[in-house]
Length: 146
Image: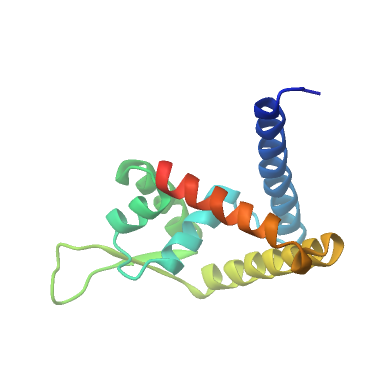
């Protein structure tokens, strides 16, 4: 195991990130969802976007519109979302979730709720303001830096 604080923090962050993704993917598969975590996170970005154009969704995901187009084509083909235009501006293409896409996100949301409930219970986080404050600062750092 690394000995410098920098190396330890790096290893811990990588381990936490990889473990959450692995467990999340495993849970979604057990629930019958056959999408990649990337595809699920695209659906989540669609759901959270107020103006669900391709450029706004790509910006939210920090990817190019071209990269998003590849994922979007697969998700539309699989029936998880659909493209549409409005009468106000026929040039703009919007994305919305289908019933199938919303169902996947409900499963995903439930996973996160259960994971956080378990973490709070097992680690007694309600009593640990320092850890919560540190996680908030870490989140803010990554949002602002990247």
